[in-house]
Image 1 (cartoon, rainbow, N blue to C red):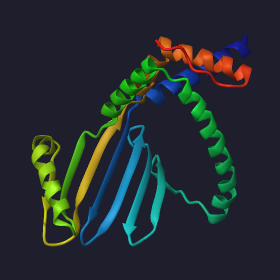
Image 2 (image 1 turned 180 degrees about the vertical axis):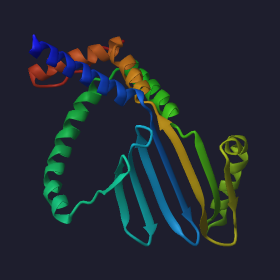
Image 3 (image 1 turned 180 degrees about the horizontal axis):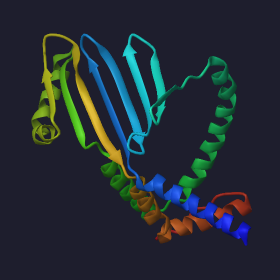
Length: 226
């Protein structure tokens, strides 16, 4: 009886942990500048800032990646030896993954492609930044390119204004200066629900069944069109 209770507590703890992982939003931010000082930095945080991974790169300078766990900072570094050891296996895995991907793509039907693209669109809209600020000065060595950029600015004037994007152009020199800020959040539970909505559709189920059958036969076949 005690063993059953312990197992029950462990199961409830795992369920609770999974619930916390998917229900608490992830926040992200990226900002950079190219003027007197040039840098780019960004972070992803979870658990209301309790867990945070930060990336920073100054130009010139080395990139810094570190994690902050409940206020304790821990730098993340990789040596050249570790990279060399992992290089060969990655190439082999990449080749195998490419072969498997071709087989999976052959199983995609038009109906499934539409549903996958629709789901991807919903996820992209969901993870799109809530704050997007760009203030830049741009100039090309060819004035024609600068003219095309001005034409694009006129066409997209309203969306750029809503997103707080300001781009000034110069015709007499090649130039790229400015600063930007991107900030948003991701609800993992929403991404899971969108993916699940695709997984339960008939085209996906048929592709999965056909994929299992083809593996047993040692090959891939096209799924019937719907």
